[in-house]
Each structure stands twice: as structure tokens, then as C-alpha cells.
Image (cartoon, rainbow, N blue to C red; front, side, top):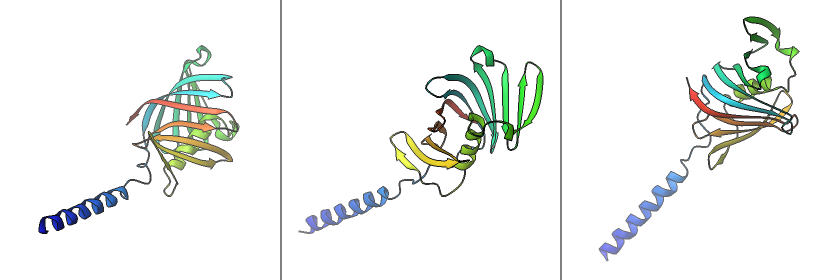
Length: 172
């Protein structure tokens, strides 16, 4: 009888521990890194425009895209930081106000989404590969998929057909 009671108590303890661990699952990914680099495939519309770029974020909201395709964009580097955009191409450089760019374009939206991901209190939905977040920024609804470590993997803006897929993400 004493052995049966011990097994019962041991079983209850195991159940309590397992139930407690189930409640300890993270409810949100870790904060996104302030600095990272990745390769991006940027699509606009139904495959109307597809380009590839190496992205770097060197601080909150500061995104640099060095385009690697198509051939017409190779050598173009766009740096979006707050209210200014710097364009560099083959030794030439110019700065323009960010307001001159379409606010639903890839750089302004990506910058705003990355800033938004760093804010506390967002409601993430766990997925098999990480996390999903639906939200709005600058009047654009978006869906973002993040890896388990909090790195942005995909960004979709249905209203504009913008899709950004990041691969080879490395934290700086």
C-alpha cells in the first residue's frame, strides 16, 4: 500500500511539473536584433517586379539594400533611415527626403515593420517554425513571419502585393 501511495504521489508530481512547463512556453519571440544582414527576394504584385538585394540593418529603422538583380539595379544601394534616403550608384550619391518615396514601397514599409517588431506588447501567434504577426503600420496592413530566434523571415503587404523573403539572416 505504501508503494502504491508513493507511485500515486510521484505521478501527481510529474503531472504538476509537466502542466507547469506547458505554461512556461514563450508567448512572444525574443526582441529582434538591432543589427543584422540577410539576402532578400523582393516581389511586387503578381511577379511583376522581382529583385534581389543584400539587406543590412545597422540600427533601429536604418535599412540598407544593395541590389544584386535585375541587371538594371546592380550597383544601386539605397539606405533608408528615418526621414532621409540615400541613393548610391557607381560613385554617385544623393540624399532625398523619405516622403518623396511611396510610403507603401518596400524600404519604408520594411523599416516601419522592423521598428514595430521591436515594440513590446505585440500579439504573436506561434507557428511550427516560429511566430506570426499581423499588424498595421503607416496605413498598410502586413503579415510578418519570424523565426524562433526573432529574426524576420517574410513580410507580406496584401494591399500593394509587396512580399519580402529573407534568407541567410546573420545577427551582427
